[in-house]
Structure formats: structure tokens, C-alpha cells
Image 1 (cartoon, helix red, strand yellow):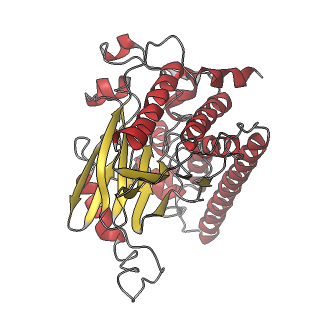
Image 2 (cartoon, rainbow, N blue to C red):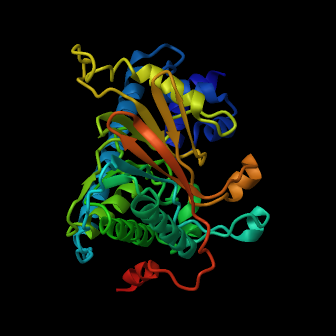
Length: 414
């Protein structure tokens, strides 16, 4: 162990970590424990045989310098990515305005806001039938056809089926994982094999969906947060929510719909947001921070609500505002878990959205799970909160030869 207390040994450990080796790889390479590597890297170990304090101090300085360098590089990459998203958006040609909807107020109709949860599209993911036991076939063309099914269902249900209701406003909660991103080398197996092209195509697809919906609703509010698949860092860094390909997708969709009347976008520099819908507080996030049990996120959501309720407490019903003057939380809305459902109890509602694909090789082989591709549509009443719900199954046009969103791919060759 004497050589493991030599300053050169400590320096060698740090150098290997700086070169990109994981702590486990360094430990195996040098024949020491991973925890000892961690102690050296974090400055908890560093004394040489004669307890030379100068060597320890120098080691700490080296660690500090390395940490600062990594931080500068990360911040620089984040800033450059956000600027790239802004530049890309400026080159997007907006869709032509559609004719504004004409409303005739129905006598005695119930006025509500329709809410569409849009998440886990993974539109650039390619799933072949033989990789999942024939359960699913998925690619960008199929996702476009499922988008058409979803949009048509929202229009039909809100304008023709529920004849006793007036829906002048639609709120879209876009919760991320629109793309499978770069993690797990997904980009190499993606629809276009290029993450910029993937994001451009998905952004235009989302924009086209909003354009079609805007012809049937006087107002559309779109709230966007990023998912875990779109991140550009090795692990989730809570200070960089817009350093994410989902952010670029949202910026492209926002620009594509910039000339449509009545459409508003909210893309916060945050992984979550509190959205006021008819006076009720909806906390939205992707949901990757919510623990689940066998795919069931309800207990995790309950624990999250219990922690956050002190911050977002009773500002509408209680004159004693929280220390952040936050909004009262009536509902939590997430995606990520590909498990569609709504659970209510003790004055709070938990809403989890489904996914655009039934399964993929990881879910099928590792987890052994699959389910119908679904997205959730529901209504919000000023007095009653969330009322009816409609899980929209996206099957129906997967094998159709044409789709009104096929032209999205043409933009990549313009």
C-alpha cells in the first residue's frame, strides 16, 4: 500500500479520471477499491508518507481547477446549444395562418377548457416488428399517421361528440421525450441518423398538429418541458433544462406556428412548471424523477406532492401565501412511465400519460411490458376541476399509404 500513498500515485488516479475513465475502471486498472478512487478524486485522501501538507493542497488545487474547467465547458456547450436552437428557429418558415374558428354559443352548454397531454412521442425511434415479438412496428412515418389520428380525435370529440359543451380553449401540456435523443446511442439508430434533422422534423410535426387544431379552438396555450431522453449531458443536470433536444423541438414548433392567431407558447427554463387552468393548479414535469413500482408511478407522485405542498400551499384559498408565493397544486401531470391513468384522492389528482409506441426492445426484453399507444385528453371545469377523460388510442392509420403530415419530411431536403 505504500505506493498508493505516493503523490505520483494520487496524481495518476486523477489523471485517469480526467481522461474519461470511470472510477470503477480506474479502480480495476490500479487494483484498488472504487471508494478509494472516489476519496482521492474528491480530496478525502491525498497524504504522502510524511504527511506533506503541500502535496495535499496541490492535489486539492488540481481538483478545483479540473472542476472549474468541466463547469466552464458544460456552460459553454449549453449556451452554444441554446443559441443554435435560436438560429435554427429563425430559419423556419412559419405555416400560413388558418381561418379563425367560428363559434356559436350553444344555449345551456357547459364551458370548459380541453387539455391534451402530449408526451413520449419518441418520433425518431425505429422499432422493427421482429425485435419485439411482433407487438409493434414504429418509425417516423407511423408516428405521423398516429399524429393524424390524435388530432382528428381531439377535433371530433371536442366539436361534435360533446355537443353539450363549449371548448373555446385548448391547453397542450407537452412533457418531453419527443425525441429519443443521443443517450444510449439512439441517434445512430434513429429515423434520420442525425439529431438536428430529427429535431427539425419532429418540431415541424408538432407545429403542424397545432396548426390543424388552431382552426377549431379560439385559443391554444402550449406549455413545454423537457424529458430525459433529449438531454445532452451524461446525466441529468438540473441547471440546464434547455440544454436538451426537446427544447429545440419546441422552439422549432413555436416558430412554425408564430403567425397563427390565438396560439401562445410557454417554454420555461425549468424542468417543471405550474400551469393555471380554469383556476386550478397543474404541476407539470416529464416524470423521470418520480419513482415507480413495476411501472406504477402513483406512490411516487404522492410522495412528491407531500414534499412540494408546503412550498405551493393554499395561495388562492388561504391569505397566508407560501414563502415563494407559489400556486396551489391541485394536480400533478407527468409522462415518462408510458402508463396512462388518472388517480384522485385527498384533494389532489395524479395524471400520467401514455406513449406513442406500444413497446420497444428495452421495454419488451428488459422490463417485459407493452401497452396500446395512447395520449390523454380531458376537460377542466372552473368549479369542478378535471372532469371527463378520453384516452385516445393512436392505432387506426399505421398502414395508410398517405398522411397529411408526410410533407414534414420534405422540409429536410429543402
